[in-house]
Length: 373
Image (cartoon, rainbow, N blue to C red; front, side):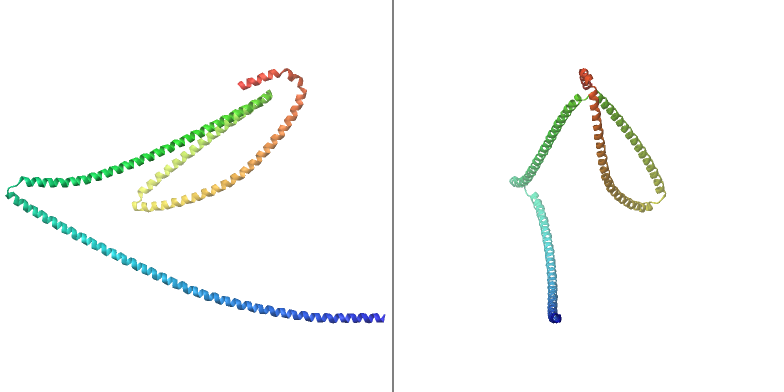
């Protein structure tokens, strides 16, 4: 027993020593990792600082460039303005010079005309003293006629050109009118075709409905016809009641409108009396204020109307959903009623088989008379 205990103790000691060694190694590794991390962080920080410095430098450079560009643009604009101003001044000077030249020319022409007139007068006086020659007179007349003809020719040419222009315009107008007429005719034809198609469709539908009704009525018996007649009477009575209600509502509306008109007329009369007592200057000021108030009221009314419309739309949507649910319930009720009626009819048929064979011809004759009526 002692030997076994000693062996166990030795083994335990060895294990403890090994464990201690392992712990030391782990600590060393952790330290190394921490140091590496610190170094990496330092490097990252340095890189960030460098990048930030570069960015700042770039920004400064960009700002400087922008400033330079702005200055250059301003200079160019100023230069353009100066050039434009110079051009304007030159143009003005040239215009002035031209005007002055024209004035001078006019003056010269006027002087020449005056001088010619004076000379002509002098010549006429001299000719009166001398004997006039017939040949000279004829020559002068011919010259004058030639000049007049030239002028007339020019005038005639202008008139002809104007006439041609007018003719062209008239032709264009006629063409446009023709095109319009053609378009209208095409539209009319299309409308007629559509109407014809609609009529044909309606006729077909009517024919189909008639055929279906005839088939159903032949199968039905005397008792069902009586029920239909009662339903028709009820429908007619309902329609009459609706019409009466509408008439009553219209009468009420008319009465309300008449009352409103009377009130408005009374108000207008009162306002007129008050205005006559006041001065004219005061009237003008009040009119302006009233116009402003009216405009504000109109704006408020429009806003209210828009809000009401939105609310109405929402309400309508809700109502539609309710109606659909009601319709579904009604349909389900009708189906249940029909099923019950069918069961009852089958029982009656079994009891009255012998009597039907005798009265078949008589029933068919009554059905035909009902169609004719």
